[in-house]
Image 1: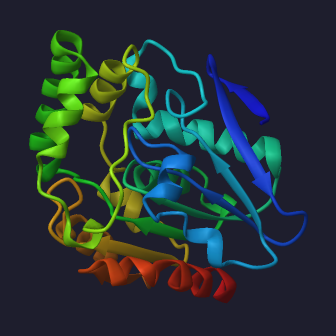
Image 2 (image 1 turned 45 degrees about the vertical axis):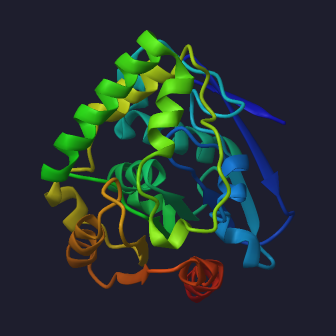
Image 3 (image 1 turned 90 degrees about the vertical axis):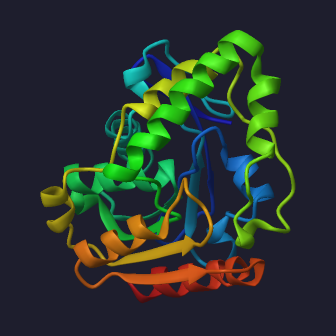
Length: 258
């Protein structure tokens, strides 16, 4: 697979398709483009006559990482995204889609360079603002646990947490971050947040928001807040695995409409 060297890391990516508008798909924290396929979050799969760019964020999957936690903040990750777009499709407007960390990255990129995006699809928006504080404490505690007890203990702790109803049938997967980098990645996630409210209010890009219930790490409150802040956005909430099965079709409709 090709790679792009950006800010001391090699970003691994793949481009599928030879013609049509470009869609760029991001993934969530500790995941990868391959793991999101296993979780049913490969939303562009229903598209036809589009090019699809998928990549692993720095420190995830097949991409290399850096030892600075600040490099894993969503604002920094947005620079990787924009650099990749400049490399693969210079000057072209694209459709962006991504869950959780991918949503945070897309929002920072859209706030910084709104002209690069035809549409946004924000999937299971993560904790933000006040709800981010408890999440950040959990990430820092997780980083300490990995260093003290190993990645297996951290994975076991996560497996014991309640599963959102929409993920009831999802397979069990392992983190796509090396044990050596995982504490750094988690501390970077603990120190980041969505763009300032004023920046989000200025976003004037067709936006679809896909959320699910029963997940404290991805609360409905964030999705509703973004829906209220981004003019003309649409919010769809999945409460069962069948709800997630509808997402590729909803995404395809959103992209082809815009």
